[in-house]
Length: 127
Image 1 (cartoon, rainbow, N blue to C red):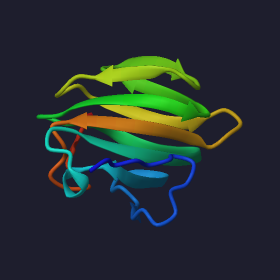
Image 2: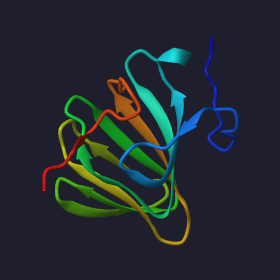
Image 3: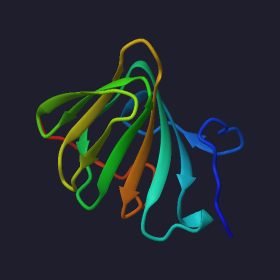
Image 4: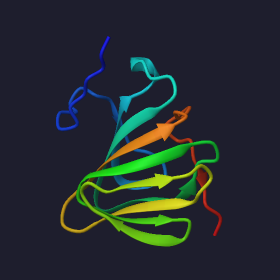
């Protein structure tokens, strides 16, 4: 059975506000409940000025793919600016933070492997 989702039509897909994020709504697109065993893909919508606090995932790799807007992304202490069509790899255990900047709401696909056990599987970065 095929799982087909259009990221422009997310109505009917459960949404949630991830902990330690501001102005952010995520939708689970691909996950264990619809057939994925070794990865997950979420759609993230971050309003202007919204962000994820600095954190890391000890056992998960992530890729962020920018669909719309611009992001200020801090990866392992280095600042990067991403726009539509850019993607960035976050290796397991590496501290990162993302913030919506620019003129438009930031929309990203977040690809994770292995899939998170819960919506809040992350560790705060030490200051």
